Structure formats: C-alpha cells, structure tokens
Figure 1 (cartoon, one colour):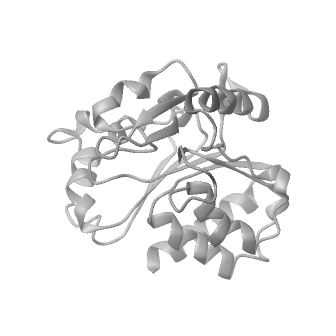
Figure 2: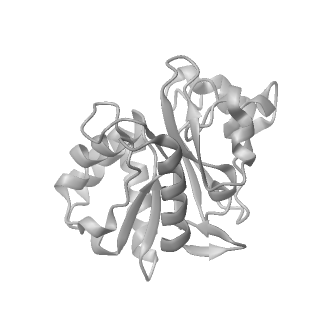
Length: 228
C-alpha cells in the first residue's frame, strides 16, 4: 500500500534526522498495522532502533495478550521483528485498574520525557481517526477529556462501554510533531470537515489537534482524501 510505504519512509527519515533518542507515541487501529508490517519488512536493519522509545497514545483496558490490545498488535507485527531494547518499550498496562494505570502512565511520561511548560513533550505523536471523528481514545461524547488537567484519562467507548486509557489534548498538542494516519472512504467526510473547518467539525475531537509547534501532518489514502 502506497500510504504504508510513504509513511514508513518518512518515519525512517524522521528518526535518522534526530541526533538523540526519539520518543514516539504510537496509535492503535487498523491503519498502523500496515505501517508496522512495512517497517518490520523494509526497515528492520535500516533504523537504529536502540535510539527509539515507543509509547502509546491510547490502550484498551485488556491484558497485553488480548486480541484488542494495541500493545499486543504492535508486539506481534513490529516489536518482535526488530532489535529494540525491551527497556525502550513503555506500554500502558491495560490489565491494571484503569484509574490507577492512568495515574501511573502520567507519572511515567512526566519522568521519562523532556518537560516543556510542565507538560511532557513527545518528539512524535502518531494519531488515527475514527469515522466518528475521535482520535486517541477521546470520543465525541467525552470531548471534554481533551481539556483535562491530567496527562492521561480513562475514556469509555460509546458503543461497547470498554474502558480505555488515553493521552489528553495538552500532551498531544505539546508534541514537537503530530501526524495523522487516516484510511478509508468512511472517513472522507470527517477529514474534509476537519481540514476545511466546515460543518460540525467542532464536535470532533480530531479537530482539536493543533500542536503548539505548528508541525501537523496528514497522511491519507486516496479514499480518505476523496472530498478534499
């Protein structure tokens, strides 16, 4: 898939251009699967993975072995196939009590990352977007979580009721670089509304992504970009 190839190439260059360790928050969902497969097959030996630290933008509150686990999917498709030190992988422990793990992960980020304006600062946050306009695990019915004071919050999926731990807006917008990865015709209308600031864009959490750095990228396949 062209999008997977282009993004993996871009991400490789982003890591290469960084002189020190690179702190990246990964996304879950279907689109990153293609990216992880491309990185594992084509960049296994081309990226200095010892300089890369992986975190997650959100996680379902399930054990890492559960098929719903974002970490589990990443481990299967990417982490198990590259030479990355185990201490460079900082997963959200979805099997723990949600409220306690949100606090624990907030503290980990505050300790591990460079802090700018008292907010942890990622080098890169990779985001997906749902066909309802949600991003990370902040959904339209809980859009107020975007402005939460905490680094991480517990969110609830609107249909399944599943608990999820998510980064909040202040962390996402404090990153040096934020990148959306969006695929599928079912998201084309939301992509148009958000990028062109039309319609009901203010109802969608993804419309609130506006990094202070000004560095926001959209990687779209042709279907997701069809209405632009």
